[in-house]
Image (cartoon, rainbow, N blue to C red; front, side):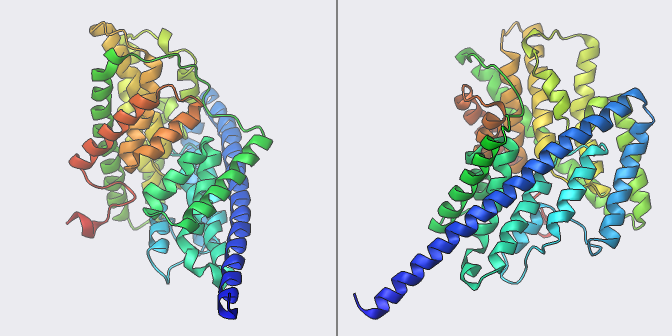
Length: 426
């Protein structure tokens, strides 16, 4: 081997070694941020929600207080820049000149936390994704040798963040591939596998449990037609959610005075919370109650009205939250809507068609179906929901329904809240 070949081989080895080291660091930092944000949000949201259920006036106070604090933080601390969510990541990975500035880490962490604990009807998933993507972007800028790995290192941070939120390393990698990168390189595989391994190891050390404890026993082939129906309904509702978010953002954008946006958004949230307290925050507290014993739930007229109200209002309160300045996305709302939609459909089928379907199964499949069609990422939705429930019994029906829901939604409306732009829509 000549001298030139040796130098080239040594250089490649050094690059790989540095990529491994930086992937470990990104994985740890992103996972730690995600775990802290998840646990802090869950803890303080439960306190705020409990106070509001005791005294309904807090359903009015908390949203306007939270949105106002977020506005002042953006105005005076975070360079007067609005958070664009995942679109910021797209802009960064598709441009050599645009980068995710480091202040995005505290900005999304703080604003995501404040949004949910004060009642904002969204989740911390997008806040976590952008903050962890920024960790990868900052690491990429530290050394010239990483310049060619910009997308890979951003995705490494995202993968680790998704892993700790949903207890699923596969969902983390699939989300980075399906939604962000859309291509696989050797550097992508190496950096993302290392980062999610570190993230999952940290979850294990800290005893992070799956979000929902369920006991899926089986599923029946006779339910297949009803699964397909659920997939179509999930697609329709995801389009409703997407269009609602885009519509509210467009209308609120016309309001030039920030305090009017905050007042209007808070008013919509407060009225919705008073009618249906289940809409407060990301809604996981309500979903945990639903998961306690859904198979024993009996459909009554008042319960049916509650389901209908929640399913129809959730996209509106989510849209109002995001349009009035809240930080978040459609991950948690999609899971929330899917759980209610699936359970409601199962109860209707059992009551009026004597279908004898299993409500718990419909809840889980509904969660995956609405998420799949909302973000156009079926495989992410499959492993994410299976990770959330720590159960893969329903893998096959979830796979089929997620594909149906995604392509049905795409046929009806080809955009998601992340991919839509006015120029593309023309």
